[in-house]
Length: 128
Image (cartoon, rainbow, N blue to C red; front, side, top):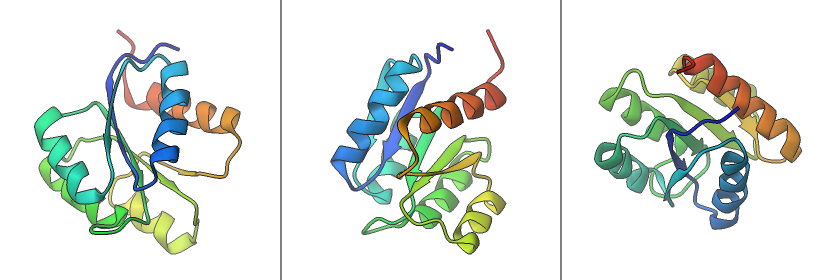
């Protein structure tokens, strides 16, 4: 797989952004944008119009669910994958109802994160 789209990583933990960024680069992503909270993420989305967003659930200033709502208001077709260290059923259901393409736990092994991202990208983007 070689996904060359622009990806926006929204997470308040810099090490998670770096870790997930490395996985995305292995999948072919060449342009990675970062935001440390939902407010910054929404501004970056408006400015850059990325192809894919990876969004943390628990963040200060604006949490992931609120950020997802705002992103979907801006672009109802935006493709968002939720990332979290907490996986309670209600949060997952809410994210999926709001249009999240997938939901990945941060403590998932690297190979499984890569597989889940690759499958989501394949499902959401038509081959060139």
